[in-house]
Amino acid sequence: MKKLVIIGAGGCAKSVVDSIVTQEWDFCGFIDRNREKHSHLGFPVLAHTLEEMPEREKYHYIIAIGNNKIRKYYYDLLKGYGLRLASIVDSTAMISSRSSIGEGCFVGKMAIINGCATVKDNCIINTKALVEHGAFVHPHVNMSTNATINGDVILQEGSFLGSASVVIGQLSVGEWSVVGAGAIVIHNVDAFSTVAGVPAVKIKQVQP
Image 1: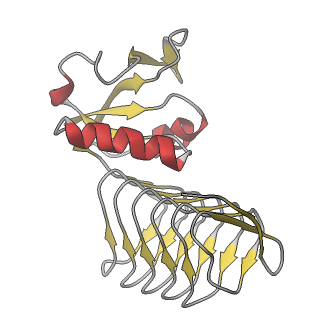
Image 2: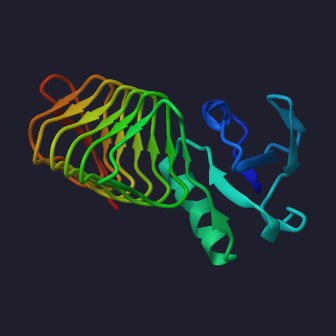
């Protein structure tokens, strides 16, 4: 069995732990930067930084942190050390055999990834999220609970979709942008912007 460590001992980790159901994984515990935390969900906090992790090469890792920028930081750190990333897919998720999922991804309960869709590294496709046919999800994206992207949508790197948001087909959501919960996106979303509402409109633009 492969030994697994989760980076982040917070709320996101609760979903990931609940989805580790196969005999492929021997879940060993967490890395969490909170030095007052020594256990989570009945499992030990093994270290507070990756540098402090004993025999770190023995393990596979998944990053259970919802913040995309922090998740990217740990992803780059793991890659820099040459360590192995694990993808965890809940047993209730429906994944087309003609889709692909990269390293270090979490796909939650009853999520759907349909035919010819691509999900790249270090993404979260959360509970009941839907990635429709031909969609392309770049690295470090977080699709929150019940978020939907329709056919051939492109989610650029680091974009965040709030719960129950919808992006209609053939649109692009720019890098490091935010789509608010419940928003309905009917136009392309600019990079580094925040959109919200029905239909979604830009409410914030930040500099890269």
